[in-house]
Image: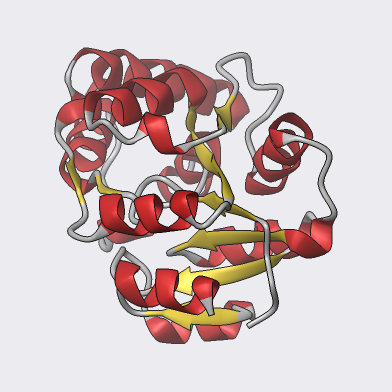
Length: 215
């Protein structure tokens, strides 16, 4: 593995198992909007909300905008804490910080929710910057979020920055932003998905990810 100084982590499926809250909010929104959940709901885990509503629910941009607001209303009330930290994640973050890495979060979840979740589960202390999607729609894609975090975490050489995430959009977004990506297998994505997306590295546990980064 190359030598990195900065590691950006996805949130859902990488730091925390947020599937229960996400699914509850999608089901609530589908009911309100009068649409049907997709046959494979796991396809909703990872992509930006507006993309999911248009791609998997057949909505147009206006409908998707309404759906995102409906989703976030429930998520802000209760969905964000229907969630748990993956085993080994705090230890991984602690090891990396102790070794001198600068750490960030790059998630397509609304930034205000990401901060609340990480503070609730006592993970915020490990990060130099927590970045997410904007609530006004100006920053939604993974690439946009990654570039935003890179700008805010400090003056970086992109060759020294690594993204870590569990889905293909993490890998694609990282590569579009000009950085490498570590695919993680303890989240929602399968190894085949990560390999096909072009993951530069793959780790099956948080401990293994830390071991790889620490050399």
